[in-house]
Image (tube, helix red, strand yellow):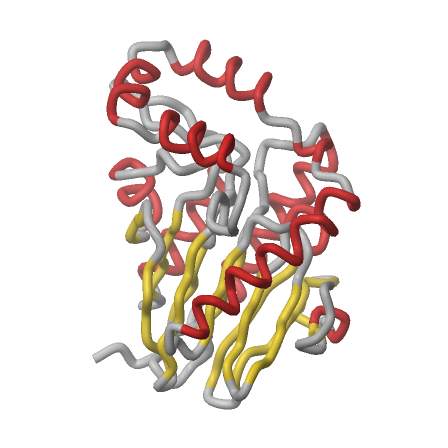
Length: 262
């Protein structure tokens, strides 16, 4: 029996470690390591809801992924008895056995449904799930195909990382793009609640949001990259939080009325 089962469950997404230049990226990593270490002995479970890394790929040969402090903190958290679950996003979908061995986390490449505090919760990164954007869905299926993955593994880690840096551009995540992404993601989350789930949680959209509907919750976790967003669940329900000055504080702005579009 896990002795932490009466303790909160935490959700975090979109840290994009390695995606910023210089001091900003270093601060994000230091804060994330501190947050993970703050959960030791205090959390039942931690769900990493995708794009924790701006790029993660596991090659045929061992490679230096960097982010040693964060990886060590996750491993310490796992060793303490907290269940750590990683869901691949569109930047780090390719995490696998190497990530598991470094952190003790279980790794999932598809959405999952879990139960905590008597609530059935759908969890996914969220990319390609709302209606529309067929072009991205096609690209997603290609990039995640066994053939494409096998071909990319033929590259050296240095070449693969160089290509990934050219494709990834977190500066392109503008406020306007985030605002446009909220309504379709909200509609997708509501559709999951209509299936009878008690809650539906995604990342991907870099803005924290919580909508309540008849005692059920639709949640966009928000991003660690700029907002330091965290969502928690305990016996009293979900809370939208943010990491500030070494502690979690409430994020009241994330809670939305059900009839608003964001």
